Amino acid sequence: MIDLSADLLAAAEADVIGLAVIGADRGMQRKIGRLVEWLPAIGVDCCECMLLVGMEAELAALAGGQRDMIALAGVRGASPDIAQPMTAVVLWNATQSHYFVIAMPDFAGRQVETLLGSERRARRLMEQQLEAASAEVRFASLARTRLRLARDLHDTLVHSIVALLTQIRLIRHYLSTDPARLADSLATAEDAAASGLARAREAIERLRTPDDLKLDPDVEGLLSDFATRSGVRVSIQIDEPARAGLRDCGLTVQRILSEALRNVQNHAQAHRVSFHAYDAPAAIGRRLVVEIRDDGRGFDPAVPAPGHFGLIGMAEFAELVGGSCAVESAPGQGTLVRISLPVAVPPAASAGVLAD
Image (tube, rainbow, N blue to C red; front, side, top):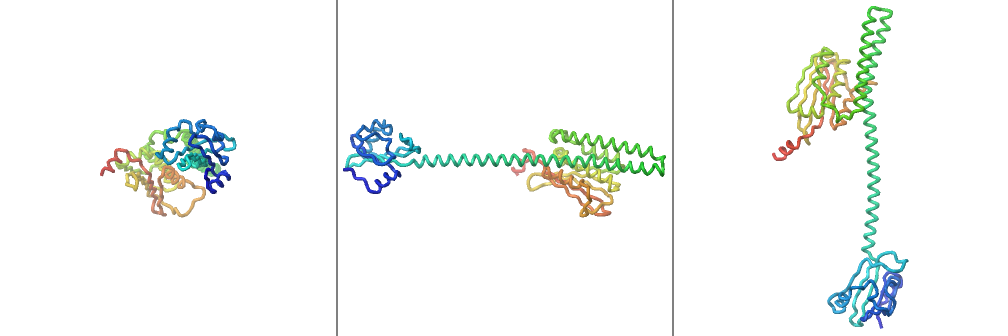
């Protein structure tokens, strides 16, 4: 008589496990529980069951005491209502000379399915995060484009329209007070309109062409043109180590310098302007520092000037490349614009620093 403990019988009847007893002749003697319905019918040679096909040597070793058990994972049942894989453990009962088969849910298989499900959920979450990050990048790019457009409009149309409006008001005044000066005022107004048109076209070209496709801006040429146009004396000092950084950051420096020189010409009443570019150490890499100083009448930076966005634009230009732009001024003390921009260190130079 086959001795099955009450606990095993209860577990088999509850479909937690399945039990089967196979005689030494491999004939089925007893089956308990739905989880072993895929084994052959009672009395049929077990070797007809796919579970034990080709395992004669293992079964013999088990019966001979060379093995303690045989464990087969990933067994699939023939019953259509048993969808999950199972693990079959084959034991040998030497006292009663029969094989004892225990079938149980394949926990390893369940773990794999759980892991696969978690991986799919993680992939969906990553895709959602990437999509959100992509949307943020698109929004940031759009915001940057709008900010750039606002600065270019301020640097071109606003200045030109202000100059043109000033000349129109002078012309209206001269109509009744000094008609002889109308021709000069009209010529000045025409020059202001032509200059504004040219600068507007340059701004449109900047919007069409990516910054990284532009040639190195001519900062020294910009300063020279300003000196010729304004009559202000300009001194230029560019330290040799700073020239590489000035080439790399030339476009940003040119944009900030253009606004600074425009402020000098329109507001500072200065006689001299100095430009100094030098290289400075930083916590990581190097920085290009540019100082633009004038001896004009100065102003109080703490007092806001409604409608004037030039100083804000200079700071934004520097921030776009990870730098900064600070303005120091006081009434009667002139103005200092200090630009600090990160500069990429060449690989050879980096290796030298590490070697030291």
